[in-house]
Structures are given as structure tokens and as C-alpha cells.
Image (cartoon, rainbow, N blue to C red; front, side):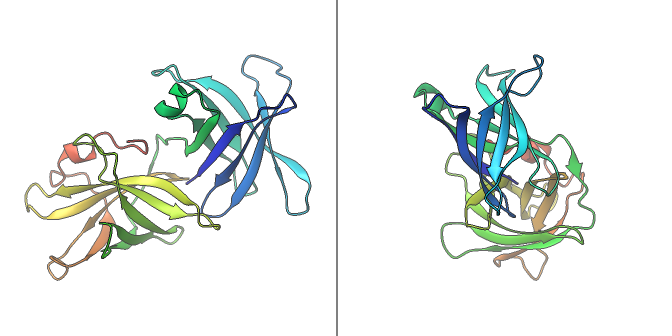
Length: 242
């Protein structure tokens, strides 16, 4: 659950990039400083930040990388701010690449794992404006308040209908997942298929309505179950980038 920006500096000193990284627990200003490479796979940068005492500390390392399919450059970062290690990428949009911009967007590293949803509960409520939803999902170790914001960039049937956002301590929106409006194959009832990227893997749940809720604004969040009830096309292309 991370977001942020990174900007290439115009100077020639050791600081090559400056930026901000946000999560639900922190907002931190970071710098990427050049470091001596000992081998081809050695990091290209040290990631530094200033702690509460005003001391500059090293919080991670970063590498210049190239996308396997796109051939586009990006920066892979591994950091630890005292809450456990995490990895993010700094990428550029098509527009930024065409404009040869110095601006990068920090996004979560897409997880290949899946977080078990068997003990998950939660609720989703339709808002009165902007076709948005507010909700929460929780278990004994995990508790997250979030918003579903309509995806204005949807151009394909399989693209998400909503992006899922949470807020950093300073109120910066952080995209942590996607959601699709779906319809049960057997029942024909509407539900919301939800994918949330967490530190423990991708969490998949459904927001459904029982008989009492049907036709209203409230949905109950239940664990995702692989069955014939869900059209497999509804879950195709799950990603944070569409």
C-alpha cells in the first residue's frame, strides 16, 4: 500500500532523485544518491531520508531497471523505515515518456502471492454522489478503511470499474487495488469483485447483498470463493495499473 513521486534533479551532485513516498502509516521525503557499484547487480543508489532528530539515514537501495515487455526504464527500490522491508517501483506514464519528463510515479510492486481471505469481514456502502463507495475490510490482524472511486480511464470491458484508495497520515490518496461490478451467473444478482494489494499478498473478496440488503446501498464483504458462481471473465486481468 504505497504511492508517491520521484523527480530527477537537475544538479550534478550525488543526489540524483528526490521524492515522497506515502503509505497508510507514513509520509516520508526521500532522496536517491549515487553509490559505488561493486558488480553488475549491485544497487545504483542509496535511498536516504531524514529522521525525527534531523539526522540523514539510509533506508534502502535502488536499481535502474528496464521493463521486459515494454523496454521502458524504471527504478526498483527496496526500503525499510522500521516497519519491515518493502519493495516499490518508480515508473513513468506513456505521456511522461513521450515528453521526456523527469517525473516518476511510485507504485507498489505487484505481488504474485495471495492473502487468504477466509476470516475476512467488512462492509461497503454506496455514497450519494460521484458514484463512489466507502467501506472497510478487516480480520484480527488487518483493518483497512477505503474508498471505491470510479475509474475514468476504463476503455475495455475487463478494465476495473473502480480504483480502491486509502489515505496516508497527511491525506495523500494511495491506490491499493481495483474493483469490478459483476453479476452472479446462477442468481443474476449484482455484486462487487474486489482486489486489494496488501503487504501479505493480494486480497480478493466479494461485496454482496443479502435479501434484506438487496436494492439498498449497503453490501457485506465476504471471502472470495472459487466457484461457478463467479464468471471467470470478471476476474481476468486483475492489476493495479488498468
